[in-house]
Length: 315
Image 1 (cartoon, helix red, strand yellow):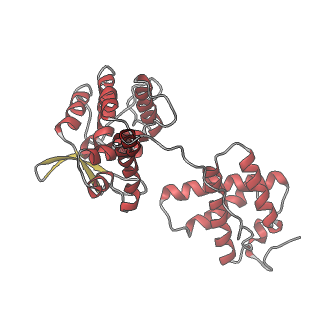
Image 2: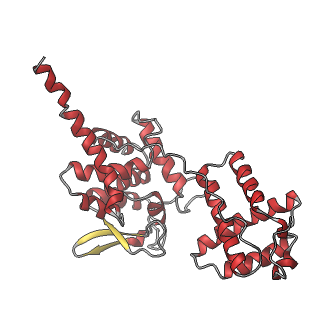
Image 3: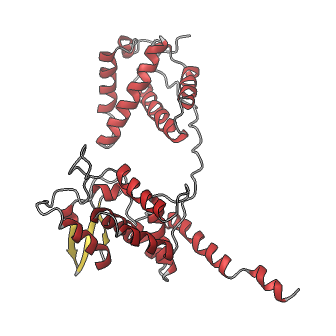
């Protein structure tokens, strides 16, 4: 049953002991051209895979395609989302492609399909009335929460971008106040959003409560006992936004923290802005990504000017 490449230098790593796994992963990671965060993720995910191989009593030289398929089925059966399983399998596939190229093991993962991504529940944008209700409610909350929700609504920041923001990222440029942004998948803060007075003033009020805060500190920090003063995580930001939405009666799965980003784009279009304007604010690399927000506007117009109602004057 063995599918190992003859005279493979990986024969010494046939049994996945912790030390040998670390050696093999070290060689793989050293040649993997990616960000440090991606390398760390692959190392962690692949360690889990090797642990699975060890628990099953398999030899690395005996692993075949059917074993990878078995691993896939166990991941899916564990309750993981298809998206997470796809990420785990991608790491395994990248590893085996590298292992074959370096004559360690054959690429037994070739042809193994990733599970289909689950269809995402469509996030709805807030109406102007709902946006105002959310802001009014947020004003009754701690200054940090109001400043955060207000910022998300007025700039369309992603949760990770809000989490990464530092106090010193607020600057002046060409007479306008901006917030430097480190976008998703980016290594540097090479983009920005404009902070209008309505976006900035709640932040200024919040920062007054942190009198000794330094520029290099996070813009939004935790107030809980377990993580007091630490940077707010995306999970915490999501919770704050969701709590506000629930408080104004928007408690369905269609309304999440991402709805605030969706609302920013749709509100720009409602106010007469162009698709390119919304694309610039949301920092989409392709206008095709921004096109999805046009559907909300088209639906609103369809409901407002329903052709079916014209029939009532005919018969």
